[in-house]
Image 1 (cartoon, rainbow, N blue to C red):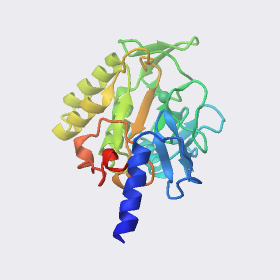
Image 2 (cartoon, protein in one colour):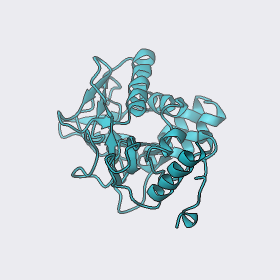
Image 3 (cartoon, rainbow, N blue to C red):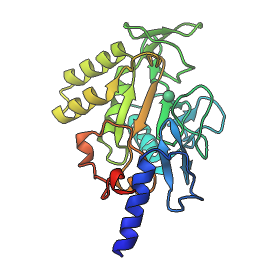
Length: 259
Ligand SMILES: [Zn+2]
């Protein structure tokens, strides 16, 4: 029994050291999100399916796959927004392809832990509408779509983000978004007197990444961190490990002990 445990620990340690593209045939118990977000693969993923009135795909393509708990959490959060606030469906961009790996236009999105999601938007008069595309929103919360202006729907966007960061299955590590829109969301949440732990989580995960990454002023990019049991099936954490995930387990055998 001990021998089996030690063997899997050794394999985990080797995998953690960088053999991230190794598919299940070489390490048969690898499953789910295998490797890193920018160098991994996906096994037994789930497709985030459109849901009437709740979720739509921006493009009809094969890029709506992720680990199942992540697709469930996104659908749940969109369902909460619809139930509590009504309005038009959430529009989903690229997740990963069915078996992960590189997809054009993205450095990450390779192991079923990333999702690009368009903002909830309204008309300038405040009527919720389906977001028609990737249009850049300025600090005033407005974007020009060519056919007119769109307004960032801070109330529904906040409800969606709150639902995600409260959801233990979602394990939200990052929500990339431009700094001005982040400020609008946090300002709104403070004004609503949201619980301090929710404000803290939101302040930690909402982030405009530095160059060369895009500012994320036309969509959010949501990333889930590995769950503890996923570490032993090949998921490689990319950090930071958020404290509300619980303790990060150490591999039982250090890499230096393997050889
Ligand atoms: Zn993305």
